[in-house]
Length: 319
Ligand SMILES: Cc1cc2nc3c(=O)[nH]c(=O)nc-3n(C[C@H](O)[C@H](O)[C@H](O)COP(=O)(O)OP(=O)(O)OC[C@H]3O[C@@H](n4cnc5c(N)ncnc54)[C@H](O)[C@@H]3O)c2cc1C
Image (cartoon, rainbow, N blue to C red; front, side):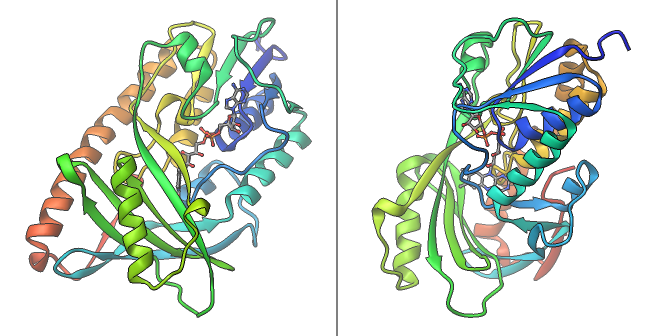
C-alpha cells in the first residue's frame, strides 16, 4: 500500500487514542502518540463496557473484575430488573488503558508524554485527535460543538458482599434527564451520576445521605460528558472519541461508540470524507433513537411503570 509507513500523530493517550494508535500501527503506519499528562489512564470512568469490546480487543482473563448481566432500575413507583445483552464487563479503567498502552508499545507505537498539543502538529501524513471532551484540536479545526452533561463520582470503601448495580433515573428541572448509580467494585462502591451540573450534584448528595454515608464533599470528582457528532474541517485531521462527542445519548458511555467509530475510520483510511459519511450514517439514527428512548423510558418509568414487565432485556449500546 502506497501509504504504508507514513507518519501519523495521535493526540491523547487515553482509551480511544490508544486503541486508534494500536490499530493504525498494525495497519503499517508509523504512529506517534502525544499526551499532555505524564502517563496513561486516570480518566474518570465507571468502566462498565459491553462485551462488544472483545470484537476489537482480546480481553485476557483477569483484566476485568466481573461480568454484569443485569441492572436494578429504581423507578418512582416500582423497581425493574433490566437485563443487558450483550452483558457488561466491569473494568478498573486505568488497568484497561495500561493494557492497551502495552499492546500499542509492543506493536511499535512511539509515545511522547508531558506534551500538550496546542497547534496542529506538522510533518505528519494525518492527525487523529483523541484529546477528550474539551479538545483543543476540535476548537482549531471544527465548527461543530457537542452539548455537555456532567458526570460525577464518589467512592466509598466496600464492606458487605453486595454485587447489584442499581440506577435511579432522574428528571431534573427544565426537563433535563439524568440518572444516579451505585456500582459495587472489588474494593470500593462507586456512587455517581450524570446530568445538569448543579442538579446532579444535589441529587448525589441526597443519595449519599439516604444511605447514611458520611462523605467528604471535596472528594466528589467530576468530568464533562460531551454528546453530538463533531467533525474536523481540516482534511488532515480526524476527531474521535470524546473530542468528537461520540457518546451514547442514554448513558453517556463513550468507549464502545469511540471504538466503533475508530474501526470505521480504520476501514476507510485515509479517506476521511468517506469515513465521516459512514460514521454519520451509522451513528445519527442511533443518536435519534437514543434520545427518543430516553424520553419514552422516563415517561413510562415515571407515570406507567406498573405496566412494565418486571424483567426485560436491552442492548445498552443501542446497536
Ligand atoms: C463519571 C463518568 C463515568 C463514565 N462511565 C463510563 C462507562 O461506564 N462506560 C463507558 O463506556 N464510558 C463511560 N464514561 C465515558 C468515558 O470515560 C469516555 O467516553 C472515554 O474516556 C473517552 O475516551 P477518549 O480517549 O476519547 O477521551 P479521554 O478519556 O477524555 O482522554 C483524552 C486524553 O487526551 C489528553 N489530552 C487532552 N488534551 C490534550 C492536548 N491538548 N494535548 C495532548 N493530550 C491531551 C488527556 O490528558 C487524556 O489522556 C464515563 C464518563 C464519566 C465522566
